[in-house]
Length: 121
Length: 106
Image (tube, rainbow over all chains, first blue to last red; front, side, top):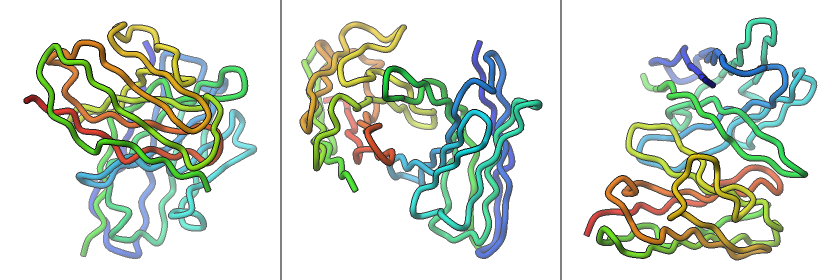
């Protein structure tokens, strides 16, 4: 059974940092791109970042570019999101999700339960 | 950047009703369109990928259609467990979701 379990969320002051983690099980982690997607309270879904199989390619949404860093450790089946210079508008539930490629496109087929990040003084 | 416009933002329907949600892209995205269902406090769940392919395990009352810029998610006979928020998402370029459609009980 595929499982994605996030951790690391919490309360942080504006300008602070936080590192989220996602541990994967039930599939060959190194064979899949992975993503972070977030959802502000009462709002819609927003893609945050993608990372390729071996971490050689990383992509970010404009709102987090230069502040967040996605990484992975295939030996530990884990995905991370280092969040620096946090702002109030980064307050959200952060989900890790598995990317499934087919033909020339893709979708997110498995999601974690999410971890809440609150940026407030 | 491609923009995604989903409508309506909310709707009320009876159990058994046929429900249609639309999603429009600002430029052609071919069939690179996915649909997700999200219930309160839960992670999104994939329903439809590639505009019209039903994800394994998803009931057949859900269907998707469209290509290019105009897409539709249809629930043929709404069930109590279908009351949720639905999102379209384009995978043609930078990932982007529609604003969501909340389906409520009438």
